[in-house]
Image (cartoon, rainbow, N blue to C red):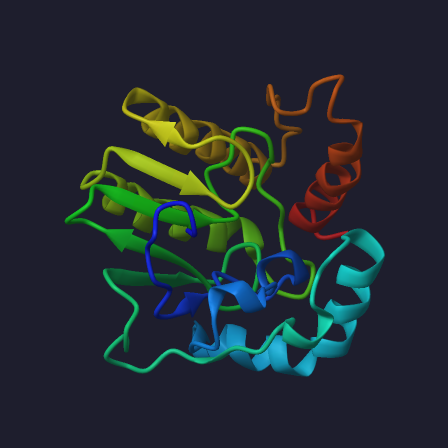
Length: 204
């Protein structure tokens, strides 16, 4: 942002996981928003998020972690359309910037992460399917998808990301073990979340 010379007027948290609740003073003392549900969870779990940030990252201003407020009904200064759903985390939201042809997807549509079900919510496979339908509709208006983790998707890759997440979720809903290229030999740590997904989808 500094290199571009673009002023920061607001921040938006896509969901209340610690790595998406970070901030830095160089961005300024501006409003930071999340969906109402996500803001509530972030406030309740702020100390835990601070502890996880301290353990997992360096140079993070811990006093600025999770200081988010509910997004006003009119969107306030956040541009575009906020698409809220309940997949992956309570109050998860994407931001569609249709005039720019960009979708900010949060922790969805990644080329490196499989879908990760929220163990605190029921029927996450169904919630994911519904969320992907909404994101698929939004993706019809964009050329670029920016996920929270992994590479930016452009052009045909946008459709491929949607297809990969849908295939994974539909396999779970059929009671099958998804076959997914993201579960490769260099992503051993994903097998824990993958097993959790299988257990949750099978009601264990």
